[in-house]
Image (cartoon, rainbow, N blue to C red; front, side, top):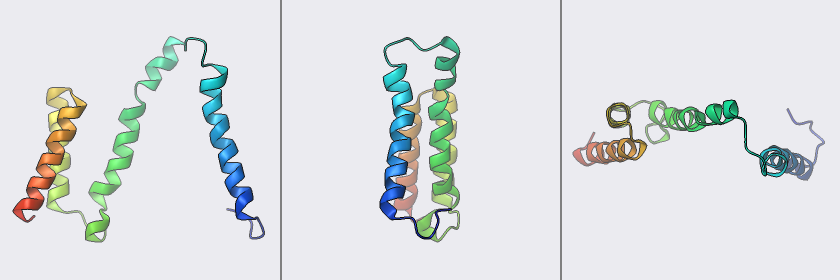
Length: 109
């Protein structure tokens, strides 16, 4: 929680400095050396963790329906996961999910 008398520019500067230091730790300090194998293996899972974290609230609590899940988004999510598991291709999964989502909207769901 930010104390009441803290100017907004102090908060903005602190967040900017923190963001810079996090990125500099990888790009500036370690950027000219190869990363350890164990770290590269862990970094491969970053998109797998981030994408569901971004998409799940949009599917389960969409703002367009005031937070109530709807058939179009749930169907598109299931199709996306199914195509992703079968095809093992992220772009195919995203394209299939988008087509199903817009197809469901076109059909009036």
